[in-house]
Length: 125
Image (cartoon, rainbow, N blue to C red; front, side, top):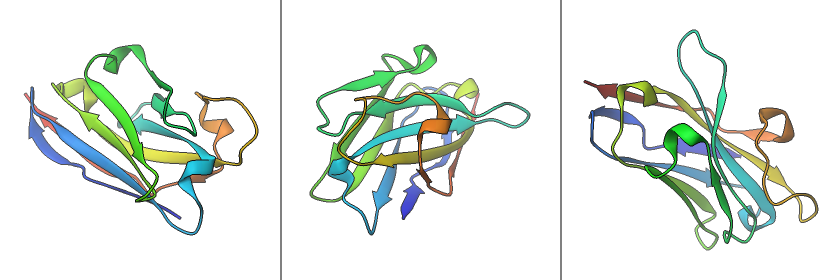
């Protein structure tokens, strides 16, 4: 139900835009988050966006460089990643928690019900 795409190889300082396309459900009724996992490390929170899209939250390492947004008409959430650094290299996953009730943001992977398959981001120095 969630399809992540847009990863690739980029030089340090470059940009990528990840997409998370939702099918079978209405993304406007969901809180969506992005997480990442580098080799040998635990999965970590990157960013989340509220159901309305009016609220966003970022992990400190990406604050000011990444921007999450949503296009409910396209049932898609995006993660614009600018000024990429080698330490941003990881498999990026989008996740969704569907339903109109609950908090505006979720930061723990345990709070999300549905996950995309992940897209690889590689940053060369």
